[in-house]
Image: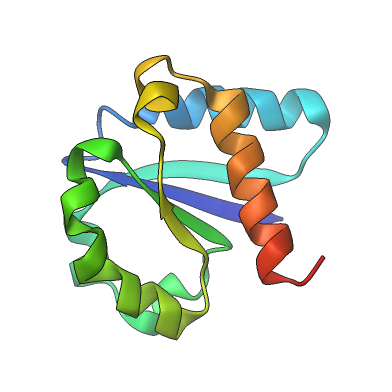
Length: 110
């Protein structure tokens, strides 16, 4: 079971996108859990806790914080990127889920 986590300002605006991603994954038969948290959860999490994730994506509204969190995810060995603004605004769960799956596959060398 894969675990993808989205991070945004408060964890609320991203929950709709997380639900759309989960729906898409369910339709495709991909065993994944998608959830959303506030970006402050990154600061509050240890590297070991973050290492339990298979992929982490940052909402575009907090993309300016990417440089603050990238080292922690790198240390945890977790693929980390920013959700494209257009996909986020259009709530394209299918595209964001595929991006997450591609990131996971690349990190595993597949």
